[in-house]
Amino acid sequence: MANKILKLAQDRTAFIEFLHDVFIKKTGHGAFAYISISDAISLFDEYSLSSEPVDRFINDFVRSI
Image 1 (cartoon, rainbow, N blue to C red):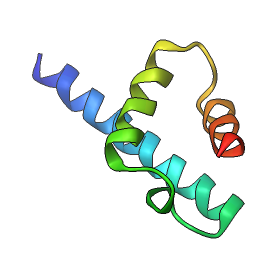
Image 2 (spheres, helix red, strand yellow; image 1 turned 45 degrees about the horizontal axis):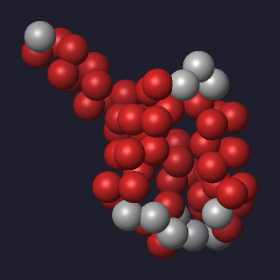
Image 3 (cartoon, helix red, strand yellow; image 1 turned 90 degrees about the vertical axis):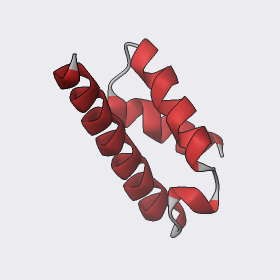
């Protein structure tokens, strides 16, 4: 159980770091200039339920902002 929680936390952190990097590359500002941390976590939850690759999912989201 602890391993699953740790894996989830690591996956979420990696997702948010990637999200932040894409925002910086595309807008010149980090993700939290546009969305809140709770929005980022909700976005991770949405991504987790999808079958899209993370890069496509995040790039599509950033383009929609």
